[in-house]
Length: 120
Image (cartoon, rainbow, N blue to C red; front, side, top):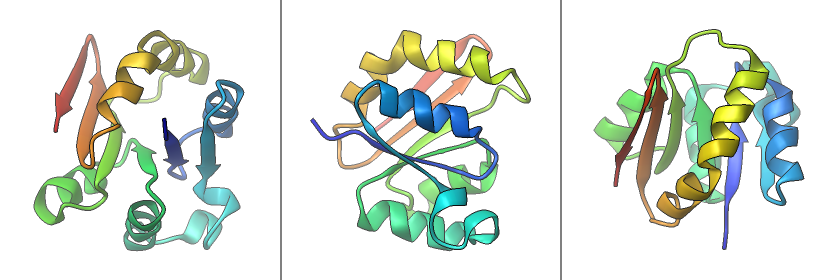
């Protein structure tokens, strides 16, 4: 089962480590492409070409997903500046469900305050 996550610049590096420790592939934009300076279009292209799920807090990716069908797979966090430990706990609680949904060719998941929204 393929589950590969590309964390956007505003996602803590600890999230990448959490995903790797669960046995899945994870990259952080700060470690590839043009690091912190990578344009959203380059992130979308890289994710789509390499079958990564983009994990981000950036609403521009949500707009692009629905308007341009890119990135094809998007995990959007709308919880503001919560502690990284709290985000890790949320991801851990719902990881099996998230992985199952992202087996589709295209999927959008949004995690907000008290909800998880899935659009396939």
